[in-house]
Amino acid sequence: MIGKCEARGSPMLSPEENELLTRTRPGTAMGEAMRRYWIPALLSREIAEPDGPPVRVRLLGEDLVAFRDSGGRIGLLGEYCPHRRASLFLGATSELRQRLPDRPRGAEDPDFHRYRRY
Image (tube, rainbow, N blue to C red; front, top):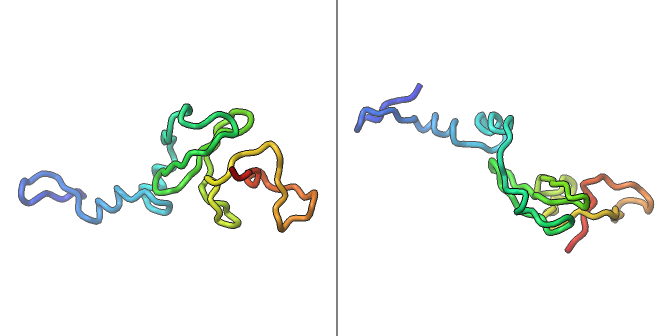
């Protein structure tokens, strides 16, 4: 229930209500609600040509990286590699798969490791 501002008698949120409605990080009520809908992040023209440099994006308290792959398709990933927490902003998509140091030669790497450093 929305309280009343004592000075003006107008509707005003309590501190608890304000917290509930303005926090959008993962795991919060509003964050979970907002993640169910499309949210514009940037214009496609703001993302470089295929295999160009990625763009940092912050949505709902999450750090993301937008990029255009070799085929011109746009992608949006969490900024940090789930394995090593390295920033994917420091890399770019590549047609060639790179072998990771801890994988045997010839082993297939997952798609999210198809990055090369600039």
